[in-house]
Each structure stands twice: as C-alpha cells, then as structure tokens.
Image 1 (cartoon, rainbow, N blue to C red):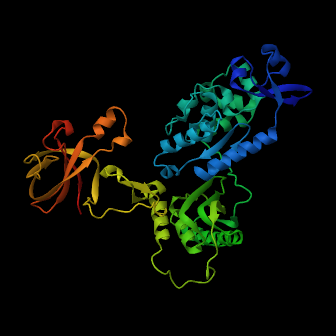
Image 2 (tube, rainbow, N blue to C red):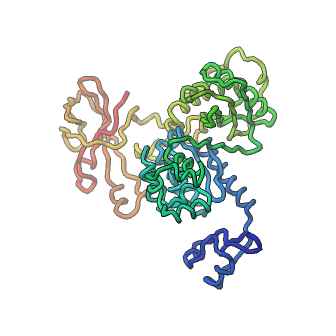
Length: 482
C-alpha cells in the first residue's frame, strides 16, 4: 500500500508500507512507475492535514508524559527536549525506553535518537535505522554524523544535488572543507545547519500547547534576569491560571513554566502535585523552588505558564478567602515539596498486602493513594527495617528449635543474650510452578534475637532443624528491629 500526493499533474508516492518498500517502492516515485514495479500496489490519496494533526496529537501526548518541550517536526517526527526530565523516570535511559515502547506498542514504526543537539538527533533518527533507541554520548555529535549523507543536515533538495555534483557525499567532507567557496555558492543555510548539528550555534524550538489548556503569559518591555523578578512574575501567572481553573472546576496536577530568552532559547521548569490543587501560594512556592535551574543568559523577554494536566476539583467553602492557617497538617503540600525535589518515583508509602512471606507482605503505593483495604497484622513481630535480600550468616545454635547463641554477619561477631522463636513459615506454593513450586515448600523458622550490645535482629533458618527435605539448614538475617 502507498499514499500519493498531486504534483503538477502527476501523482507522486508520499509514503509506503513495509511490503511496498521491500518490493522497491520508495517515496518520490510516480504512481505509474511504482505500479510498474508492483502491479498489485494499492494507492490512496494522502491526507496531509490529517497527518499533521495526528503528528501534533502524538507530540502533545508525549509532552504530557515526558517533557514540557515538545514540537512537531513535519512530516514524520517531533522534537522532545528531555533535559532535566529524567528524574521522573529514575534515569534518562528509562525515560527513553518507556517512550520507545509506548509509541511502538501503538502500532507506529518508530526511530528514536537522543543527542546534545536537535540537528544531530534529527540526522541519526532518520539515517541510522538501528531498530532501537540510539543515544549519542555528550560531545560526540561530530563523530555520530560524520559518515551520514549530506541530506541528513535538512538541506533543500537543490543544495543536496549541488553538493553531490561537487563530490560532497558525507557530512565529514563538509566539516573539513573550506567554508568560503561553499558559502558563496550555497548561501548561509548550509553552514547554519551544520553548526546547529555540531552544537556551535543554538537551534530554538518553540513548544506547542493544546488550545484548551489554562495558561497565562507575560511579555516584558525590558528583559529580566533576577530570581526575585522571576518569583514575582510566577506569582502573577499562578494567580491568573488559578482563576481559569476555578472557572472550569478543575485543579492543577502539573504546571510548566516557560522562560523565553532574548536569544530565542526557551527553558522550562515543571512541577507536579500529588492531588489536584488551586492553592496559589503553594503552587507558586513549588515553581519558585526550581528557579535556580534557569540560565537567563542575556535576559528573559517573556514567561508562559501552562497547565498540561488538570483534574476535576469541587469548590470549597471559603476557597477565595484569605485563610488564617491550615486546619491540621497539610500532607499534600509536604508530599508535593518532597516529590518535586527528589522525583515522583522516589516518594512512596508502604501498604500491607495479602501474603504470609515477609518480602511479599508490603507493596509500594503513591504517597496519597487510597488504602488498599488490607490491614497490618500487629500480633506478629516484624522488623522496622528489612534487607532487600536476606544475607547468609554463620550461626551457633542447638537444633532443632533453640534460638541462636551467636552469629557472624559481615565479618562481625554478635553474641545473643535473648531469643524468641521459632515462628514457622511455609512457602506460598500457589504462586509458583515447576521447580519453583518445590522451593516454595521449604520451611523457614524465624527468630527474634537481642545481642549484648542491645541490637535486635530477625534471623531465620531454612528447614525445620531435623528433616533435610524441608531445607538446607542454612541461616540468614532478614532485618533489624528499631
């Protein structure tokens, strides 16, 4: 299958599917030529406006999830500036993998590249069909694009043809060539694109926003560059945005503040809230906490505040009145402050879950999420701190049921003065299958012990102390009591 567009009385192939490409049909061929290669080729009229709208929708989706800096790059791509956004996913690699997986799962064929410069990322994404995300290490853009064709620099077709006639096929040939003769023949565009790809000059990208989002903007007669000025403008922008949120009955869950520099560069800060909020003072405080990440350069000529994510929030009595103080602790404000400082994924609480095994008895949940309905079992002693994985220890103890008298952990000797146990646990065989089900039948005998220095630890033995079929009789430490 292929789509086509009219061109001076002819029909030109605009896009092809994988089967047509494998048969030799490529964009740019006439439909007549394409059908001579593949007689059974199905051709439909292209919908450029629909394609552009679909691309814009995809870019806006990525902007809501990954970065406030997003812009379509017609006809088949979009820019995403992920600078400073990696903390939302733990690492930059995790963000890239999540983006790639989600776009690919939607049925689209995706090529993704990450680089210091937009020009380098654009060239690698379109001319290095790796079949996976490609990350160019910082400062390595020259080496990454050197062997790519000159067309990767986003030059007009006539300039590409002219360069080929002069013997310039790869970008590395342009990098090493004298600039004056080429600039005289091809103008400034050639070296502007080259310098943008190499990071010698900045390439501004103007982000897009959905039309319906609450937003506020301030332009300045004279550029501003101080943190105090930024904070004052942020306060005004938040007040205006909150007024719009009140009108539509919603509260902000995410705010993006854009700083437009006089040199065309745009920077942004993003904050999120654990629950929908219209508290102007709280939202402004979250934004102001990130002002230090902004590099004003020669000055900021405009600021824009956008609410990319908002949720329904009913009006409250006295919401518009000046409150003398909060009634009780404001847990949501504390969660917001911590999450925006350390990352959403670094903040959670532990909820109990239905499992007898200690390592499966708790689950991480969002800090303000509703309880899952399970309660804590206060009758059984459980340590306040547990190891991610139980660690082996050397123990002196009388079998089958006596508590340890002494144990050695991490090359340190601990003499036990008191011990309580055993508490016998059996594996959850219904969770496992095959060989793992046999392992699940192994018995664990847990002991709570106190050492002569006052430390209290949670130890267990694999096996019941008498039958080798129930376990290896090895000892482990699983946690420590407060």
